[in-house]
Image 1 (cartoon, rainbow, N blue to C red):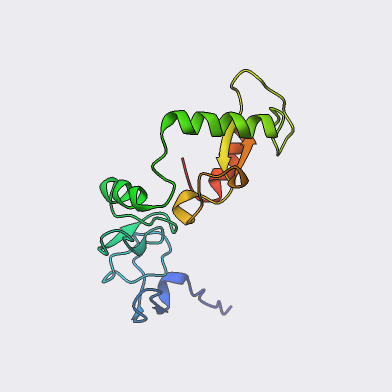
Image 2 (tube, rainbow, N blue to C red):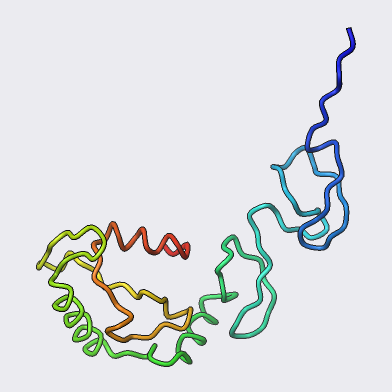
Length: 152
């Protein structure tokens, strides 16, 4: 009886998504589309910091900063980011009143501080602290909205 040998992922050469060279995957590691020379695994993405221009590796595709320091420096440059606490509280209350203290996704009602105000277009994507860019959400819907950008 003739049996055909099954060819696995590890037995064939592949092209690296990062550098384009061909490689044979290591059997010890998970299936990866990147060669060992790039030292970038399946869940690591090469990025360039928008603040200082340094190249770095990130587990998230949307990461824009190489460090928390660069994050704070860059955000301080964004128009509307430096917002005093009292101004934010006034704007937050204005948005909650406009939305009738109701989550705009699931329509849960709360006047006890349960609702959170969410930026429709995030500040790091060019959004601003403006009533037109804010919406009232309950914590569950707010968390779901942030998952889109891999936020905590």
